[in-house]
Image (cartoon, rainbow, N blue to C red):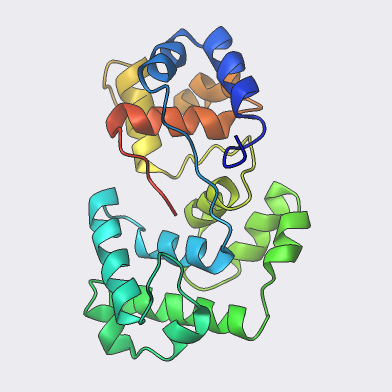
Length: 211
C-alpha cells in the first residue's frame, strides 16, 4: 500500500521470525499500521506538544491548537503559529515553554533555517544532531520525527516511557529494568526497530499514536 513504509511487510516477517513475543503482538493487531506524516513542521510541533503527557491529552491539546491557529486540518502552517499569541497557545493546554518552543520552531521553518528536504537526505544520527540543536527538541522528539515523517526503519526510542514500559511488561513480567536490559531485549529487532516499537506501543494502547 502506498501509505505504508515499503519495508513493513519484510519487517513483520523478520520480527515474527526472530521474536516470539512480538510475533504474538503483531498477530493481535493485523490492521494497525504506521501512517506517513509528510509535513515536517506539523510532526515536530505535535511531538513537542506531546512531550511527557499521555497520547489522549496530547491529541486534545493538538486539536485545540489547530482551532486556535485557525487551522482546518491536522496541518498547521508555521506562519499561523507565529501570528498566534503565546497566551492563546497556552489556553490550548500548552505550558509556557512548549508554547515558546513551538513558536520558535515555526520561526525556523518560516525563515527557512530548517529544511525538510535537507533532513530527508541525512543519516539518522545527522538528523538527530540537526534537530536537537533547536529549542525544545530533544532525542525523543527527534526519534518521533525519524519514525513518523522520514519513516526510517531502525529507530529505537529508548527515551520513550511507553516503549520502556511495554518491554518491561512483555519481556520481564512488569519488573523495572535498567536500560542495558531493555537494549539487549531489543537487539533482535534490528534493522526494523521502528516497527517493533510501533507494535509494542500497540500492546499498551491499540489506538495508533500520530505525530
